[in-house]
Length: 261
Image (cartoon, rainbow, N blue to C red; front, side, top):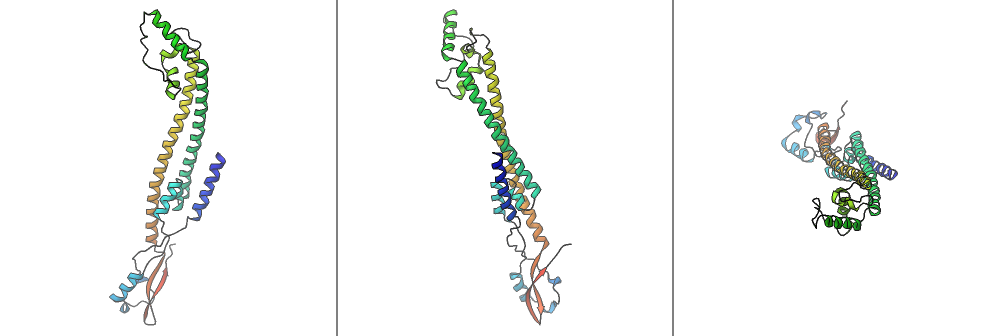
């Protein structure tokens, strides 16, 4: 199971690494009039400006909200990797993998112990002995029911059936090492210990699902926020711009590269 999870994570990481620098077109109506070499204000009239304003754009690496949300929904942390936050993304993936590992381990352990205490109950607790003990009590008390007779045993061996036979004192007489209605049973105590251990592991598995859900919600919110910050940074950097340039008494479009040192 762990090898499969590891291989799955590596597969997703390869896909996300390929998409790490995938970009969308950035449209930003910012025009760098003062950075154009050879530009003469006499050429810059309203018609020319409007023409280039409608055509101009900054082409950069905007990240897609849809892609980021999809990646995060598939694997928490993938959205962070998509926006360039590798360490943060690996942290979310690590929490997800750890929780699923604990979930499967705990759930399997709990189910195994459940099978054990079900078999133990079927071996050491008898409904016939319980009914005989109840009949004897009524004979000894002029037909009166015991004061702790508060529950009816289900007809079939459901989860409630196995819970009641060990949890409530009225069913103690049904254990094969108990001869009195209010007597003690070592087998009952052993059974309750097994049932407690099973419930402990199963509850831990349920807690892992809660952490998994919380991890995914936090990752999704962080992904959306990360895309917003990433795109704002790209827009502010203005990496490549299409701007008007004066050449042989004509205004022509040209690309302007901007580097930050």
